[in-house]
Length: 77
Image (cartoon, rainbow, N blue to C red; front, top):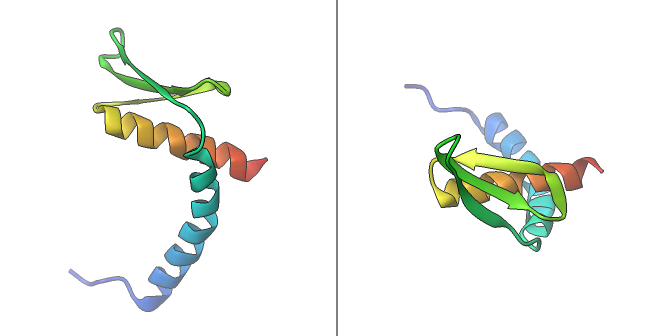
């Protein structure tokens, strides 16, 4: 399998650093994680963004997904 070249890593690094600031801000919010019986997955929510939630198979994945969604909202606003 051929590995991606340096240009790929440079673009990925630049994008990651821009998103990192928003993600760090998103980490400052409080989140709740509950089991969704209907979806049979964990649902992570941020009370400050009531329409936003993230479903995942584990608590950790749900929390990470919710933080990333909040980060996207913060970055886009």
